[in-house]
Length: 136
Image (cartoon, rainbow, N blue to C red; front, top):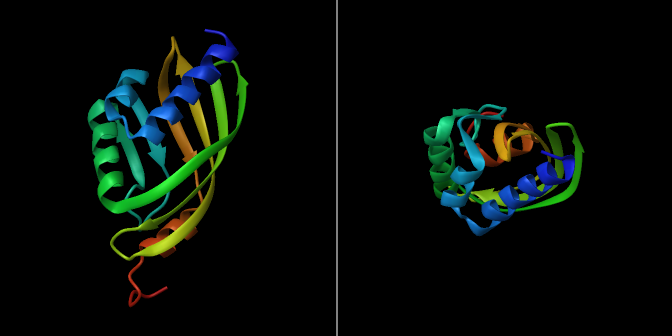
């Protein structure tokens, strides 16, 4: 696949996220996808594997986080696409808001995503997920 096709595949992936279209998302990722979201102390952190892991991640996200996200820049080389973006939202359990500048490093092979590694502001997300009476 060409770099341009890889970028378009990733753009389509983010469009499906924006629509909340889980079925389209699963069609765009391989059966053995690995999606890594670093951090501790917030609902989406962890390593999510396969379609089951992505489905669980999407369900957890819909139950625990309200967010709007926007991809601002796409940079690609070979089968790798880096996406720079911004998310704003709140953690439902605490009603605390967050602002998260992020980068996704995505591997695309044969028109499907095989690996996603998020580089996010884990401190901002964990702070928003922490209950007001929890120690800092």
